[in-house]
Image (cartoon, rainbow, N blue to C red; front, side, top):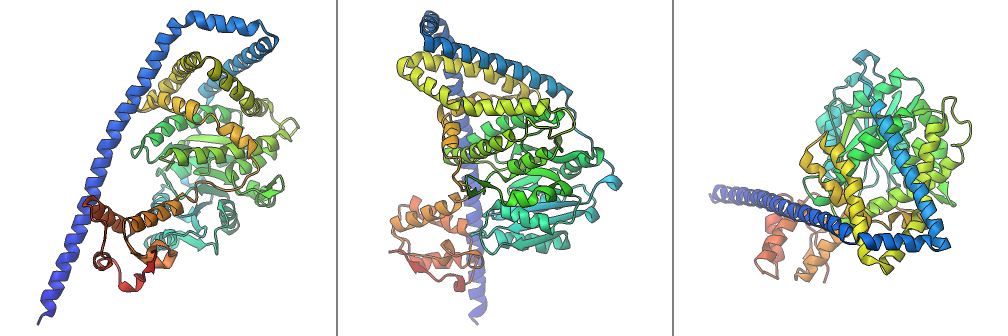
Length: 550
């Protein structure tokens, strides 16, 4: 007789707990949104105060700047530096005007009709992406692309979280439309793509990062150049930031991406020489891929296997074979970017090392007869890229000297230069998207100049180092929570914190919210039975084998 009341009571408790969890989630998002908006206003206000201050001090210290320049020309070393700096400035201005001219000549290729679209294999490598890989696969399946011509492959690269579970859920939901595979261990993104290339049957391979979302017309726009021009070997997609509403750094990177893709790559595309097809969204003619595939998978640098820069390496090798590499502004993908400084600089270090390596490789062929058509554009782009690398150390030394001898003049001139140079980015972005978002170009330039100036010199010095750098952040965050729980007085932690794949059946976020709630209430000791009681709403006790962390 007591069974029914007990069931009703249990159901009520579970419902109440779920509702409370949902309310906490909503409250957290609203609170975070308000804090983010307030911080954004404060950061932008500080940015403009700094820039306005630079105008004032440029006028105030005008005589000091003249005296500083005169003192430099009076010495042999200073005169040599002035000549080199002036020459580089003239080159940079001329190069900018050239890129601007090429940009106005650019037009994306319109989509061809369904009957002309090639057979396409989309490859989605995934590592510790969780639910995001499911969303990526769903967005790809929802593409306006003939289903009979589309093969979708996703490969789990030995993830330590529930990525494989989400891929299986996508498989159940999407059926035969998606093929999923699991690497026996984490081998790196390059090896996951390699497996996908060998499994693919399409005339064109499309690679999409597992934290990216595409528009419905992205795929057809991306692959149409292969139909229109048989010389096209690769096509770069247009990348925007998916998580720009969550933090300040993504807001800045979104403005930077628009300039990098829609301005720079548009110009490169008119020269048939886009230097990098991004991992977030790129397409390759399958015949071009298989021609360079053995060299690509076995690529080394200074005797060590290359496990970074697989997108830039593939682009470089396809260019070397004389193929055209284009950019499609109308093929959009939205990808997640780091939200914290640590993740940002690690991503830039990885990009910087890849840039150094591939510029060395490009130097081996760019001045040869690698293409029947004009090679002047490719060579000019290479020279511009190389100058950035070569001059990074001299300008770093000069900057340190300037800071040590004339700190106020350095700060003033640098901020004033940022105001002048970043205004183009602001105008370019605001002409296409929301004008208020374009103002982040100023903040990003300040962040990069003062907070990331060391990236290129460091990337050069450590170019031979391996490692993805940002891939271990999830595991470090998990360890942080475990240590936090231990510090709070919890002697036992459920197994899902340290288990792989099948053991992760519990709601980790729910547990952390519960822990946060108790911490807010200043309850230093949390009874394990109470934790079991709450978590059991979502799972059975067989996944709750605790381990001691005392």
